[in-house]
Image (cartoon, rainbow, N blue to C red; front, side):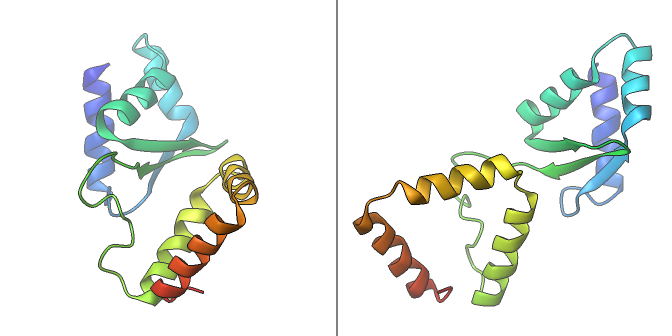
Length: 130
C-alpha cells in the first residue's frame, strides 16, 4: 500500500499540489487499489493521517486538497493578508465545507451568549470584515 500511496503523492505534486487542488478518476483509483489487494479508503485515510491530505469522493473524480495541520505557528489562515485577501480566503474555505460543517458553525453561533456574539462582531469590525 505504501508504494501506491507514494505514487499518488508523486502524481499530486506533479499536478501542482498542495498549492492547487488536484483530482484523480474515482473508478480507476478504486480499481487499482483493489487489484493490488487493499482498500482505497484505507489509502485515503493514510493520506489524511500521515500527510494531512483531505479528499472528497465524487462520482467521476476524487478531489485532493491540503488539510489543516493542528498546532502550528501558522494555524491562522488569514495571517499576513489584507482585507480583500481575507474575504477571498474565507469564501474559499466556506465553499470547501460540506453542509454539515456549515450547519455546525451556524448552530455554534446560535448557541453563543450575547456577550460572545458581541466579541466576535467586535473582532470582525477590528479586522475590517464587518
